[in-house]
Image 1: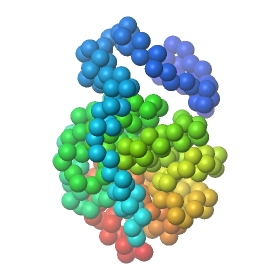
Image 2: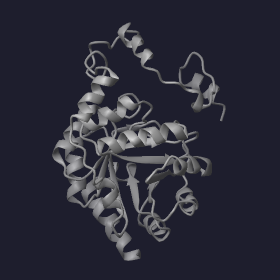
Image 3: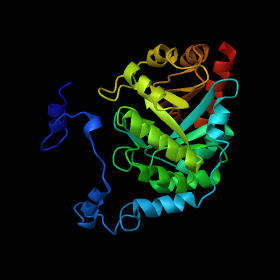
Image 4: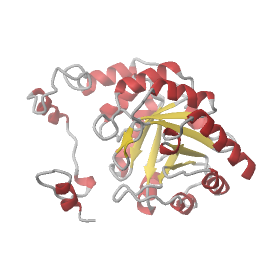
Length: 295
């Protein structure tokens, strides 16, 4: 794919390809917010000044109790295959998924149907998410909740803690090994689990070297959005059996679940399959039943 041409087709005036490892995130960039270059300063609760500085958010997060038992990881280590069910209104690859979006009801239905954890998006532009969704869900359900936004700054980890999340997503395609290691340390200090996402052998090596305890394989190629569930099956053998292994995206039904279970997968993250179902609770129950029959 010619990414620069594709970007221009999508409406960008200019585009260039660069290695994500060359991206540098500095607090100084927050000055752009103070200059109100996007027009949202003092208008959006997710933006400065209401969002506060990194140190202010860190202070808020550290004031909260840290669950050192790491319930998300503890749950995934139990026998059987586990279900992380996603509450998602839209995605970059599929566009609008659920025009009617009773997010809290959906989360409660998942929990009632036996979901082991919930995944929630708060990114507003491409996933049409809101931080209010995450906070409301964590206030109402008793199972762990993953903030499944692309983490690129430690601020987001501290913020996730204040919103009630028990898990954050760290993507190897966006973060180098040392950054992932440092973010895992922050998570440990806060009592959060880190789901470290990979897509290929190189990223798997980075995740392992960073000390990831929970590794998720994204079956969707973030470069061209193609999906291949065999990606999880192929990469599973590279991971120590003691490392929690999660398969993400592209799960189409019971047959996929059976194949992943037999391959030693500890959990699956399912979004679109459930979000597009007329009866999400029933769909999850059917999926669980089909998997048990084949295993």
